[in-house]
Amino acid sequence: MYKPSEDSYLLADSIKAYKGNLALEIGVGSGEVLKVLCQRFRSVIGTDIDFKSLQYCRITLPSNAALICCDAASSLSCRFDLIMSNPPYLPVEDSEDLDSTIHGGRRGTETTIHFLESSVTVLAENGKVIVISSNISDYDNLLYHIGKLGLRSRVLRKYKLFFETLIVLEIGF
Image (cartoon, rainbow, N blue to C red; front, top):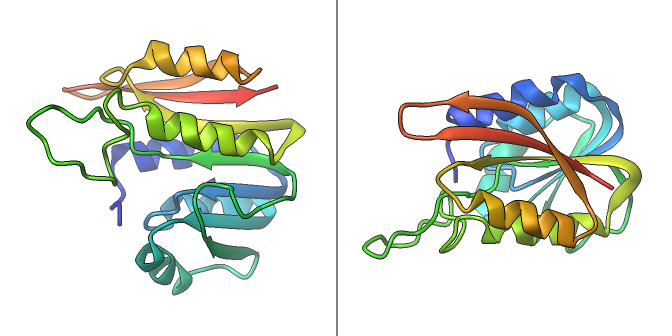
């Protein structure tokens, strides 16, 4: 399970400007961001492939939220006003072992792209996807795939740490 860090808190703060009927968090981890979504949306669904993360979140789950063990949005068919995720976004270095809680693939963007591909099928026409990326990952590759999916993006926020800059993107049709 991914423990909350600067990126989690940045994402949670960034989504406070959104509200609506139905929201989805892909990769709930510890549930910190899910809690903020539950304050801003009538109903919230959280997905994760890690059953232990879902069990942990269930303990503090508000009544307007449901948890589903699945890959991204693969088990869903409803339309969401907001989809958000703090996907693993760091690239895997040659000498590193893969840690699926932080590594998003060789370029660092593969998991984010997978989440976006899954999101497109359940995003409402005027809905938004909010994701975090990093300047350490292949950011240009991510932007290319966003366009290839027929989506547009804009930078909502940037947060500079000593070793990287975190980028919060808003993505929509």
